[in-house]
Every structure is written in C-alpha cells, then in structure tokens.
Amino acid sequence: MKSRRLLENFFILIMFLFVLFLAVWTPLNARQSARLQEARMSLETSQGRERKQQHEYDQVLEELPKARQELAEIQPRTDEALQLVADLKAQRKDLRATKKELEAQLEQMENEGGQQP
Image (spheres, rainbow, N blue to C red):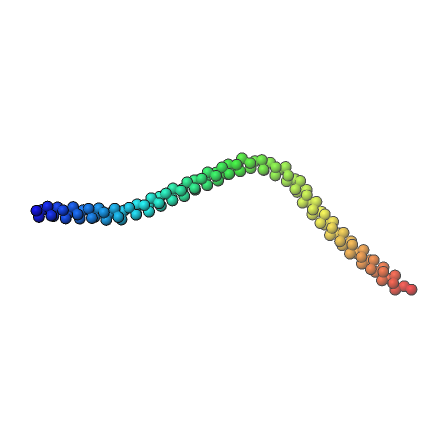
C-alpha cells in the first residue's frame, strides 16, 4: 500500500512537471513561431525587392549603350550651343559698353547744345 501511494505521488509529480513544462513551452513556442513567420515574411519581401532591383539594373544596363550613343550624337551640338551662348554674352557686354559710351556722348552734346546761346 505504501509503495502504491509512493507510486501515485511520483506519478502526480511527473504529471505536474509535464503540465508545468507545457504551460511554459506553449507560449514560448507560439512566440518563436510568430518570430519565425515574421522573419520569413521579411526575407520574402527582401528577396522581392532584390529581384525588382536586379530587373531594373538589367534594364539600365540594356539601355545604357543607347543613352551613350545619344549623348555622343548630342554632345557636339551642346558644345556649339554653349559656345554660342558665351559669344552672345560677350557681344551683349560689348553692346552695353557701347550703349554707355553713346549715352555719355549724347549727354555731353546736350550739355554743349544747352550752353550755347
């Protein structure tokens, strides 16, 4: 009878420890599963972004020779236009200086004309 009671107590202790283990393990396992799911989603998102970026990069590499060719075709005209702009600015500067000189001469002539009776 005593060994039966001891066996029952041992069984109760084992069952209590098992329930305690399940009570601790279940929430920890659920939390770990949620973290794992979140990590999977993050990984899938990152891989999707990587695929998109790789696709965009491939498109740029494909279009780059065309853009370089267009640039080579446009560059001489751009250089000519920049030179024309510089020439026009210099011409404008010269014309402004000439205008000032002519205005000064006109003012001098008006002053001389107004002083004579």
